[in-house]
Every structure is written in C-alpha cells, then in structure tokens.
Image (cartoon, rainbow, N blue to C red; front, top):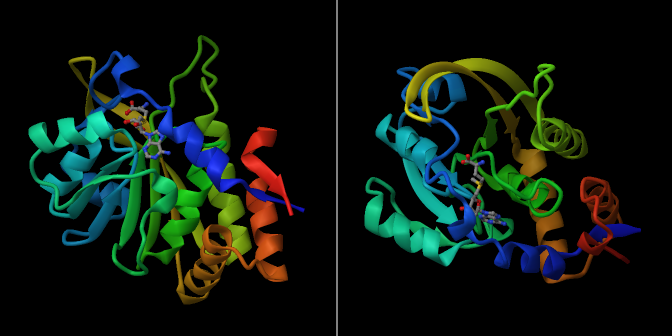
Length: 243
Ligand SMILES: C[S@@+](CC[C@H](N)C(=O)[O-])C[C@H]1O[C@@H](n2cnc3c(N)ncnc32)[C@H](O)[C@@H]1O
C-alpha cells in the first residue's frame, strides 16, 4: 500500500526559489468590496495563509477584517514580507505540510494558487480539516485560445477537495465567481474559482489521527487506507512510499 513520502515531499519544497519569479504580485490583486463574502470568510475569522508569496490576497483578506497569519516556505520571501507587508499577525517560515500545528487554532487555511498540487498541497488541506471551519483555495484560470484552462491547477484542485471530502466525510463547495481585481495594472472583473472544504468534528478527529500517523509513525489499518487514497493525488513515484 502506498502513502505520502514526507521527507521527499519536504525536500522538493526546500528547493523552491521565489527569486526566479518575474511578476512580484499574485496573478490578480483583489479589490472587491465583497471579498470576504465571496470567499465565505467572516470578519474576525482567523486565517492561516499558506504559500502566501507577495501576499496580495492575504493582505486584502486582512484589510477586510479577518485576522491573518502569513506563511511561506521561502526564507527570503518571509523576510521580504516582514519588511514590506504590514497587517499580519505572525510571519511563519514553513512548508505548508506542517501547518497548522494545532487543532482549532485557525478558522481557515487559505491559499491563492499554491504550488505543489501533486506533492504537499493535499497534506496542507488534510491539515485544514483540523481548523474550526476548514480550507479555501482560490485560482484564477488562465485560458488557451480555445478557452480551455492552462496548467494542472484546474484539474487537480477539484480532485483534491473532492477526494479529501469523500475520505473524511467533509462537505465541499466549488464556486465560479467574478472578483474586481487588478491584473497587470488594469482593473478587471475576473472569473476566479473558489474551492472550499468544510470540516466537522468527525473529519477533524480522523484528520488528527492520520496526521499523527503520517508524521509520527505508528499507522493503524484505517489510517493506511485513507492515506493510500490521498497518495493517489501524488503522481510522481518518489512522492509516495510503499508500506
Ligand atoms: C503562490 S505560489 C505561485 C504564485 C501564484 N501563481 C500567484 O500568481 O500568486 C508561490 C509561492 O508558494 C510558495 N511555496 C511553494 N511550495 C510551498 C510549500 N510547500 N510550502 C509553503 N510555501 C510554498 C513559494 O515559496 C512562493 O512564495
């Protein structure tokens, strides 16, 4: 039976270099008056932002009234954020596979277009089931000349949310919504996709059990089965291991 291979997944993320990215913003910079409403976040909700990058979405969420912690795996990105981005609670340098550490510390895990859909991202959203409310992923689909989405995110984000929802008995929602946002300097009304997984006490308990099994060892048969299903999302052989 195959389960996620944590050391290999963690090693891949260590090598991410933000210095190579040319556009020093998120792909879209939201300016929508109903940002929180459209995302399903309430004012005062505590949000863990993962793979936060230049932080345009996380910053707008904090400005709209949520309490947001910034996190990213890149040391240089986090030190840039500490110097240049105000309005966050903590600034955490960590691979998202280890966050959140505690149960019910946050309402939501949030990301705008995190990388790693075939590696660690399913584990970050497994951990989002530890939150009070769950996890939200947002993407801005880029379309080719035939109107088809480019890249893996639009294929894998829905799978990720559906598979986790099914394994852990958590509801999920996928919504296509327009947000006012800036894109390369122009103000546009751009279609985004919101993927939300909503946790509950049973999902939280099973997620805690499987996270402990995966990160601390001692894997019981029921955890093996669930982790084996998560491993189906990790397509490269080095990111899974046989047990
Ligand atoms: C947000 S994503 C991609 C950018 C996105 N397309 C956009 O337009 O905003 C890039 C960020 O993810 C971070 N990242 C990648 N893998 C990560 C991981 N495993 N844990 C935490 N952050 C990660 C990188 O350091 C980088 O800052």
